[in-house]
Image 1 (cartoon, one colour):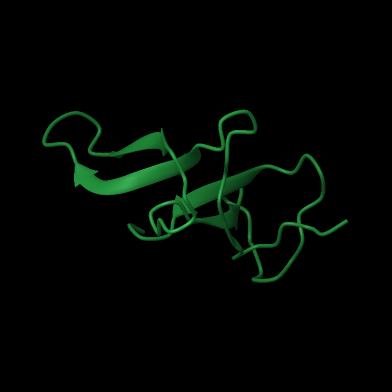
Image 2 (cartoon, one colour; image 1 turned 90 degrees about the vertical axis):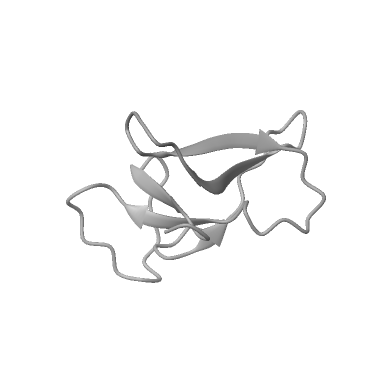
Length: 81
């Protein structure tokens, strides 16, 4: 089985609808200051649906290192990081 590795770019798609996890560079003026994350219909051409895999907070993550099944990871939106 192929492992997800630190630094990999991936898309997350809903199994039943094929909608992809998406983020747009729209920062709200108030509140937490974080971005909006939604699911969108994915025709394969969207670049806002790529996410970069990182290790859990406070964990060193060497690029290319594989994660074991069940490992905690962080996802960072590729276009707005």
